Image (cartoon, rainbow, N blue to C red; front, side, top):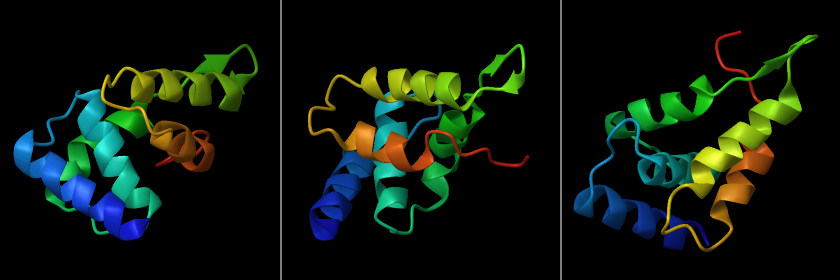
Amino acid sequence: MKSVAIIFIALFTTSFGADAGDSCATLMCMSGKLVGASTGKSCAGPMADYFKIVRFDRHGYSENKTKNARQACLDSCSSETTGEGKRINDKFGTMRVGS
């Protein structure tokens, strides 16, 4: 599983690049993070984009709304058909970075 994800990430970053603001780049970079692979500098922007998605409700930070918004971001990548986005979001969906 790890080798498949790493190969997929390598192919994706060589073919398409990892531009900030691209949900597919975010998906690929976060896939690498999920399996513990070194993601490199090209993934800094896409991973930051994912963790910048933060939602609040009247009580403050909302884990549920944040997780749902992050899932919507990952789901907007049309090539995501394996359920990898859900696995990523299950692990990192409610995590706050820099708080």
